[in-house]
Length: 112
Image 1 (spheres, rainbow, N blue to C red):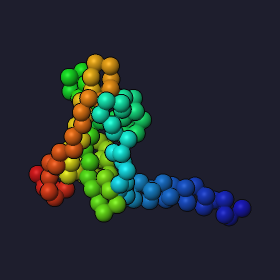
Image 2 (cartoon, rainbow, N blue to C red; image 1 turned 60 degrees about the horizontal axis):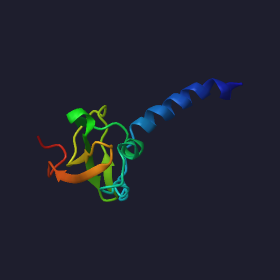
Image 3 (cartoon, rainbow, N blue to C red; image 1 turned 90 degrees about the vertical axis):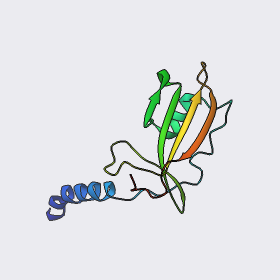
């Protein structure tokens, strides 16, 4: 019976600690992007909600960071919402990726 009383505490601590973990980069995060064939839906499935949208959703941007393992997608709700790169995706009127570019925006992640 005593072990059962600790179960809620263990569950809460596990959830809190999991939320504090540092994300690990993924070398293949952007490998699915192919100009002329990747759709906007493919992008949302792989990368989720963009950091910003422009021109009625025909341009999407994602903020990325990088570590030794690869690229890390930065989420809007993260406390330290910064990164080294902006991924810019431009779609045609049919929602197919016309062009994409990874632009370095900072040398050091915490610089202004």
